[in-house]
Picture 1: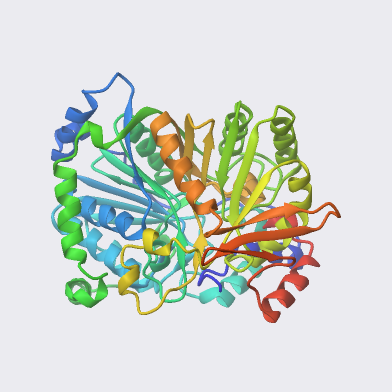
Picture 2: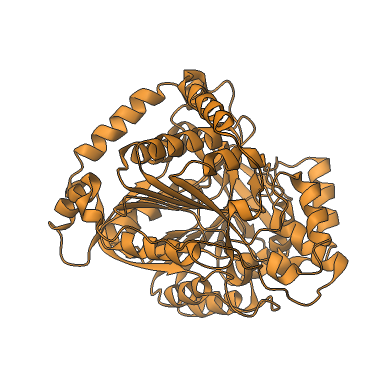
Length: 531
């Protein structure tokens, strides 16, 4: 099982090894018009509703709603786009030109045609789309799309992008820095943050595999902080207007025909999950009747890396704001640290942090992907060498199963799917003492720590933290994950339950000969610090 995204930052790492590092080049300057989030979101219909809710809470409190299921997360995004009256700001690492990608484009176009200003930032390297797909949307006077740190390889495919990178004059240190942020902000009043990008697999609609992910919907004082972060990127030289990279002449007739086709695509029920319209209506009604009691409330702190992550572009060990603040958060644990991360590679500092916690008898439990569930086997090839040390420290390790038995509870349309497809863990969460929770885009690996920009919320809310902890523990349960154990002889064994019966494995479970061979080859490559 593998993602359609061939984990492009890892290709960059390999390119570095093949071609070496030359001198840095600045991002080419381009003409841009700076813009900002609306200054008066409380004047919009959504803003007035949110203001009434926030006024019922102590000063500084924001409200939060967990978006645990893929279809639910899609419905909230679609509904909020429909409810927008002034602005939509969207920032994503991945935007595919698949079913969800086209529906998202149509929803944004529909909002723009109502007069809503739409701003989109997307990382170009992970953008799987025909340039015309974005160019036509960008051609609407109410829509502007900007690309983060472009390499000029949009629409070239994986091999074409690799060739473009290798031939880019050796500017690898800059090109290897990507924007991993995921935010969706409507009328400056509500924001969605978490692990989901714009592609079928993030919303349980892929026919080959889907991501087990988590988002949080935020309202109140936390939202202007998210908007401010978006503006920092939008107006930064690393973020380039689409037309500076994609030069396509579009006539008014071509644009009108394209828009008609996009609307026609979105009008066909077969392009949506079953009963999507009913779900959209129910989600709209849920928003309209939203009460303070329906939300978790608490103080929130936004962690957002600067564009470029840190100013030392030619270093692969310089920290960004995310790494610093999450380290500080984790070190504050007194009783328990629960974490989920799809990609797990320990750094020396991370080992030291966990050793400190274990010496203070803090429980540490981490859920990541099993090899069979992992869409980045090269990451697993590095993590695999660290498991024995983690277990020896007393860290509890769980590896998510692609055939997790709770799929009927996690996927709303599970009973209507032609056949089950594997799940891959993609949520990035941290729960401290069941009092504080982090939800965002940060993985526990070198890329998130040193290279990719990340964003997330640290929320002081015991009810929210306990709710997220319950989700993590459900995913760690024996019928959903393998629990790793260290035998007296120092061997690792995997323990799970299938159909209520205990199962043990003495080697990487649920993989075939081909996967095992790939794993063996990757363990020999010197790419550990770069993936």
